[in-house]
Image 1 (cartoon, rainbow, N blue to C red):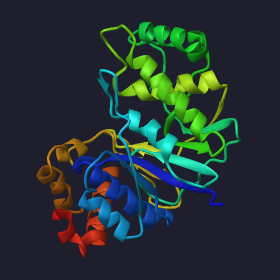
Image 2 (image 1 turned 180 degrees about the vertical axis):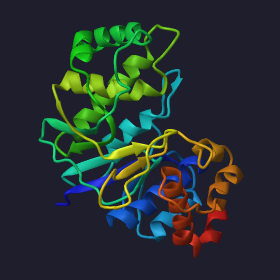
Image 3 (image 1 turned 30 degrees about the vertical axis):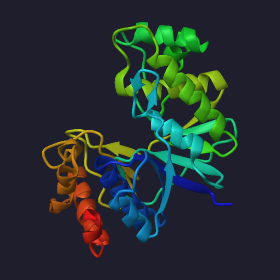
Length: 294
């Protein structure tokens, strides 16, 4: 049995296509293994995903989980990926598509009643979210005090043992829908999914094993160490700066394709490392570049 599979949730659209291509390339380049890219949505598979397959990647198709009732909530696909990914590995390492590896990776080894999570500080009860979380906790059968007194970090990647995967995924989806359905004008926005994961962990009585292997591209973040064997293993480019802002490459296929026109900058900063990855991935897929427009 494989120790773990790297898994990323994507959709059959140009924005997540280029992110999945970067993720796949960084996995092969830095970790030495191909991830499973679960592509949600119908229609012919986009050309970039076919390039991933042609370069040794593993693509799995899945229906979209993003819509439930009146809500169209894309992060629901992450929990859907955990539920439906076809893997025989002992652990699933669930990543976001806007991540790249900077070096080799040490996956957590959680017990059957544990999940591995990345340390985070954004899942904390505060004056802005307390009313909504109180309602969510009441609906989920979780005491709000437990979230205040013993907060759970739930950053990605999330490492889930095979024995727990489907049960956690089902309850995660349930808690997402529970929070989305609350009668408040303000929701928890893009954090709804991660708060729902916290609620699911509490409901199932699970423990968490916390690691610190990820750095985000926030302005002013220190550069990774010069020695590639040290420092963070992954860069989560969920923010942005003047050198790289992922939202500049969101929209139609033509706008998304411009990401491949970025030139490397040189240097050790996070943006420089990211631009280097873009250039290296462009070369990696370059022999098949014409296929991207097919």
